[in-house]
Every structure is written in structure tokens, then in C-alpha cells.
Image (cartoon, rainbow, N blue to C red; front, side, top):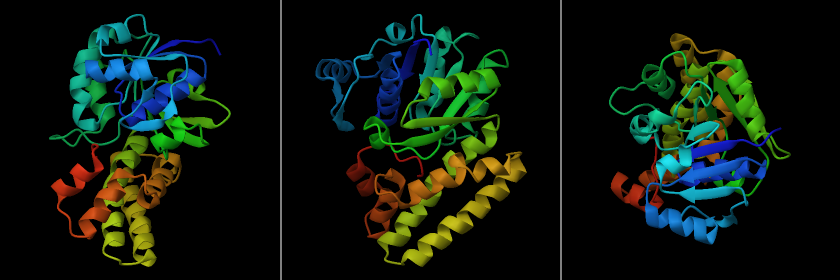
Length: 284
């Protein structure tokens, strides 16, 4: 595939890991970080010392705090900020969004205050002329950064745009599968956060593996019912974007939402647990 210029907006663990995967595939990646001092350190040291200290950057990844420099002449735009910053980031990146570049994101969650899914936020902001896509599924950032085998879902408003993103990410250890079902893909990625907190709480309270299995299974049933009510394709929620992400987040100790639940189940407050984790926890 021809190498393209990709702006990745958000230098947290997930944005960095996706930027690394894209750079490994031979693409020119500009990773935008809000903090100039941190961006400079990441570019100089070739590592995200805060979130992924054991994974060095490929040569094709460069970090900047200059949003215009990151987005200028980019062939593709990828937002990887927490959901609470999604709308603000869209406002900032809007001057660079074109029908050719489109807009993709890897953020998971609902818009705070409105409860809208993020494709609804982006669709209202940019209309039907801009192709939209989201990347979701069972994918811990640390494992993607290390190049461990991973499979995700790419949901998009336009099949050619979605397939193009799947091909950009595709590698020996990384697979991306296209779907047109944005509702189902986003719903799975958002609801699993809440269920992971519940599973963590049950484990923290010592309620056993039976309880965890029941929470995952009955949580999936509720997710599917909500999906059907909102027009999602049930197959999506039974795939990577639904049950895949749900199982990973509810059982894997890298999950921030599960770790929050564990801390709560062991008697710590929300503030104490969030401070201990040190990153945004979407399931709150």
C-alpha cells in the first residue's frame, strides 16, 4: 500500500499505540500532544515515558504540540482523545477536515452531558459530505505498542473509507475488519466500560468467578437489547466490537475500568482510585 501522511490527535496510551502501528506499516505519522514540554521529550527520547515506557517509536512517528503542523497536508486524520474532550478536539481540527481526508477516531464512550454516541457528535458537526470512521474492539494499548497480535473493528459511513482505514492498519500482527454498523460498534465500546467497573467491583469484594461470568453474560444481553432498540446490528455486538471488547475489559488487569472497580470493591473512594490509576477512566 502507498504510504500516507496521518495526523493522530491525542498522545495518550491509545493514540500513541495506534500511531506506532501505523508508522510500522510505513506511513508518516504526526502525533499531536497538548503539552509542548511533553511533546518535545517524546520526540527527543523516542518513547512515551508516561504511558508506554517500554515501547520505542518507529522511525516514521514524530511528535509535535503544534496542531497545525500535525494536520497540515495530512491525508488522514485520527482523533484519539478521551470522550470528554472529543467535541472540543473536533472544533480545533475542523479547519483541516476535508472530504478527501475524512475523519476517524479511536475514542470510546458517550458525550458527557448529552449521552450521544460520538458518531452522532461528529455527524452533526461535519454533515454528510465528510466520511467518518471509528476504530474499536479488544485492544490494550500496551500490547498494540509491543506488536502483539490484535484484531479490531473499523466502522464507517462509507465502505471505501472504512476499508481504506482497515488497510492502513493491516499488518502481520494486526487485523482490522470493516462494518457499516456505527451504532453497534460504538455502543459496544461505550457500555463495556461500565460493565468492567461492575466486574472489577465484584472481584474486589471477593464474590468469585461465577459472579463475574454472570455479570459479563447478563451485561451482554442488556447491551444487545439496547443495541436492537437503537438500530444496531446484533452481529456487531456478538463480534470484536461487542463481546470481544467486553471480555477483554472485564477480565484483563490492564483495563482501567476493571482496576477502578477493583479499588472500589476493596473500599477505596472514586477519587482515590482514579488518582491511583492516573489516567481517564471512561466507565465513571
